[in-house]
Image (tube, rainbow, N blue to C red):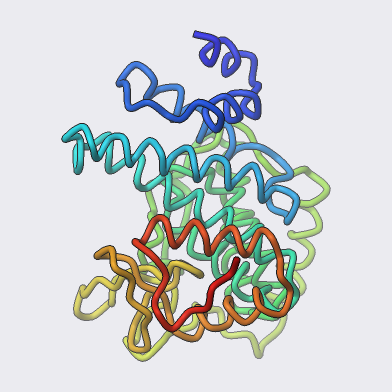
Length: 302
């Protein structure tokens, strides 16, 4: 009851600490509170930064606890369980992104996580997701992606003002796993000033004849962040560190369905070794819990 009251008062941080302290019971009457908590957090401002790590990690840990509890109740693979598993994955991406943002050599990992989150815009706000993916791509010099994502962001902000997605052109996202049909946010998540800044940048870049306005492709002739191969329809698993598809060089974990790209995994381990970053160490500790231990090639991070 107290949690219901707090969530109505928009105190999501207090609700979160309540569940961190007391665990997340798998009672159906709590499901709406967990969902509301997730929705409040993915809509909150100032969460795309290193300082947000503990909030995201707390949400991730609460959802992990909930999914474990659901698994024990023969609720495994029920629609509720699958929905919370997806929310758990998303909160793991957000937490790992915040951890990676605090370390210079992991900025491409943070950018890839923002880009991977675009496939989840059916449940996270689309304008915010495209803004975050576009600005992250721009910061690491991935101009094509930055241009396409920020252009989409501007189209979405126009759609929010018009109250309809009908005018959106989906041609940039054909043959990707980025959904077309997404809920329209009630109001923009990004300030007018930031939108104007993006508008100016997109306009300037669109004058550049050298920029190919297409998403980068990999050896599957498929957009590189898509989990589904365009020509064959083959599904790849998402990398635990970046969310990108795991193709050839992989690190496998004990739990089925959990893999990482070897290069990203080694890069993350190396950064943890060099920096001793507590958030990155905590990410590894969580992955170990979630995936039945770390691969034997890893090192101990105590």
